[in-house]
Length: 459
Image (cartoon, rainbow, N blue to C red; front, side, top):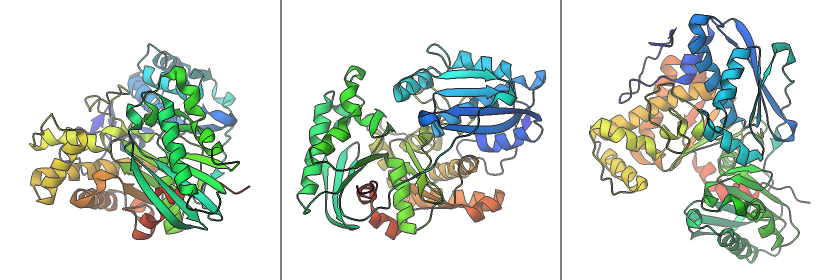
């Protein structure tokens, strides 16, 4: 197989998507003959800098491949580590092309706007000589695993909210309440629900020593900077959103509160359940949610928003309507992947159904062993195998936990089977190191809200 003059090998092309060009596989092939060294550094909050040394071809005939490689590389870093300043060191021409792309009017306008909302500053692309590349400054932070005392654990989901009262690691009370945060423009709606949940859990314990929150979104400290829960809240009213969890905790008392991305908390629950680290958690539901903890059970301070990171280089791939990009993770590891593959497999879905209902239709066919549905989940299994190759190039992964409604039932079993078969066949060393599976029963018992309760250290 060939793309932009680079020959790459893929023995198990996805059954329903033979045009899939796995970024990680192509990247490995691209680098075989790339000899011109460059460096890419990405700076984020607290002065933290991720530095990646790589090579390009640097010849006129490979200019298109060089730009595609570096542009996708930078895109992946911005959505994995996060950052507001990108240093391109060693290739001025590529730096200038990226500067034009990452502007309010450029090809990567969505990414530019997201960075502005997240860090409240414009994204910069800096052109530097290779020897001027800044030094790496990565600091992993301990996350969770604190079980002492009386704790509240809150899991803010998009359709229901769950709260637990936890005493010395034992859940003494838990409840789920339906709410509609994505439909509300007034952040007081969210605030009142959060406070109500906190107070309910507090009433089940003699005191409250700490509060931990698992919430979808991207955070700076405890402040939601971009979060789907508050998607209807105008940016002009965002100051109330940024302080919402701290203000809610103050209603309970002077207790420590820690808020973390729900993907990281899922990975933490896995680490607590398995007693190991180097875990990536991937939840395949409405979108793709990803979290990661290292070998010490620490988080890296990365945003891990891999739903918008590239996995497929095929420019005819399905477009993400929100980010406007092609070939990004949310269209491969979510209910959208099932829906996009259905007509290719010969399944016509009623357009009046919601995405979740369309998924249920296909899962129902899968339960009946319909070969069309089997082909869909086998295709997603192939996507997952080749994307595991990509993710392992940026994260040290020993356990990959697959979660979410797409992974339920026979479909999830098929995804895992195909993924692991491909890894064992084509990437035996990776297969031996990285176990791709569902959470075990012990991990399920830890639960998202209980893992969230373990986030803060006591004063």
